[in-house]
Amino acid sequence: MLELNEANFEQEVLKSDIPVIVDFWATWCQPCIKLTPILEELAEDYKGKVKIGKFNVETSPAIPSQYGIMSIPAIFFFKDGKVMNQAIGLQPKKKLEKSIKALL
Figure (cartoon, helix red, strand yellow):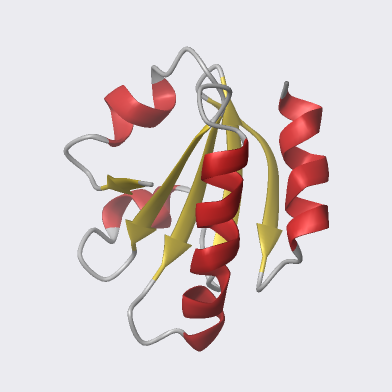
């Protein structure tokens, strides 16, 4: 899984030639921690078709602020540099998969 930050966000997410799922999270957020293994599975399942990355809102607050993130985990689904979908809170794998399939 990608570690995203302000330095690589534009290149890895906005200019990506494949869809990107971004998990906006923080180290103190228990639902965020529970979401990580689900995202790791999805990253493996969809390797080469989508990129999945984690963006720590504590270390780089400017980008989450641009997207109006008030609650975490916030999962944003990007395609061609645009937000196509989003989900707030801990999500089941099946629901995330459905959103990923809609991007492909």
